[in-house]
Each structure stands twice: as structure tokens, then as C-alpha cells.
Length: 112
Length: 114
Image (cartoon, rainbow over all chains, first blue to last red; front, side, top):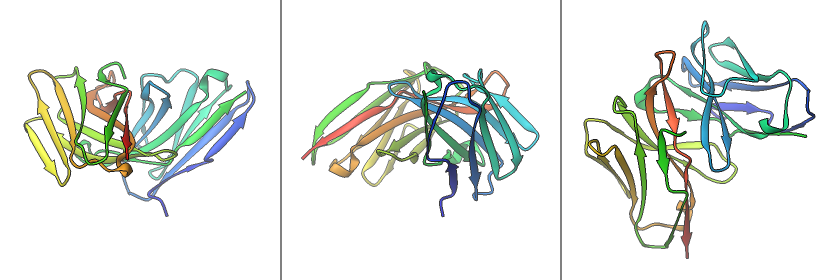
């Protein structure tokens, strides 16, 4: 099993719909992150959480919300999806900065 | 991420060396990273370097850090077709919340010609 699992792998949704992307990890890491990847723009940080009660906005949090249900679970919600939120979304975990991050395989979201 | 810049594309022939360059802006970065992304996959950590080091070598990979110029490079010796991927440079920065997080460059697509 993967260390960081994202579901779904692919999703097509309509404008205005609420959608949740889920992430679970077996690394035992305290820190979890959500990034968005657009072609030519690299990865942009949406939200991050250093423990269950510590949630922080990243550089592009507008239109997104998160929930850290447990140490191992961190979900990302789009309250009302819009087409420019079409992107590849990655969840990542870390225990400290030195070791870098472990990434999930990504969720490809298309908003039509 | 605007704080980390990379060229978008590099093409080399199999067996040659590849050098991927990156510039960053945050002088307080403690660690700098190189990640590899293969098609349809997430990012895989290749290597990282602590900011008080100038060089780190790991098999075919050599990382050079010029802290004065805020320049990081990744050299891949004897490049193989399996090295074709997107390579991301990342630095750890202090976000507005006072917490450290990684910020990534736009990625360099390495194409290895047989």
C-alpha cells in the first residue's frame, strides 16, 4: 500500500458543485499539505497542517477549505467548484523539514 | 512559485550529463531539495542539501549550492532514458504564519534522446 493515498484519482465535476478530495497517510507524520499543480506553474501551497489542531492557509487558499480529521487524514474541499480550479492536486506529508515531503499520486480534477 | 525559478525544458542525449539549474530568493532557507515527477505520478524526493554545504553527491546525482548567488544545480551523470521526467527545485521558506513550508519552482522537463 502507498504511504500517502489520495482519493479519487480522477474526478470530473460541474461548476458550482461541492467536492471533497481525501488524503490518508501511514507514515505517522504530523505535518500534512495540499498543493495544486498547473502546467508551467509548479506547485502552489493551498493549506497545510502541522497537527490536528493546527491548520494554516497557504498562498492560494481562496475557494478551498480543509479538515484534519485525524493525524492520518487531511481532506480538501472545494465549496463551489469553478473551471479555473481544474488542476492536479497533491497531498504531502512530512515529519520535519530535513527529510522532505512524501507525496501522494495526485487527484486530477476537472471542473466543467 | 515565484520565489524559485527554473528553466522549463532541457534536452540531452543518452549518456551525456544533464545539469538542471535553479535560483531561489529566501536567504533563510535551511534545506533545498530536488524532486522528480514521472508522468502520472506524484513527486519523489531525489536528494536535498543543507544550506551550510556546497556540494552533495549521491551516485549519479551531484548537487551544487552557491549560497552567495542563491543558485542550486542538479547534475545527473550518464543520463538514461529513464531519467526523463520533470525535476522540481524546492526551498523551505517561512510562510506568513511563521511556519516553514516548501515552495517549489515551476519544474524543468528533462527529455533524454536515445
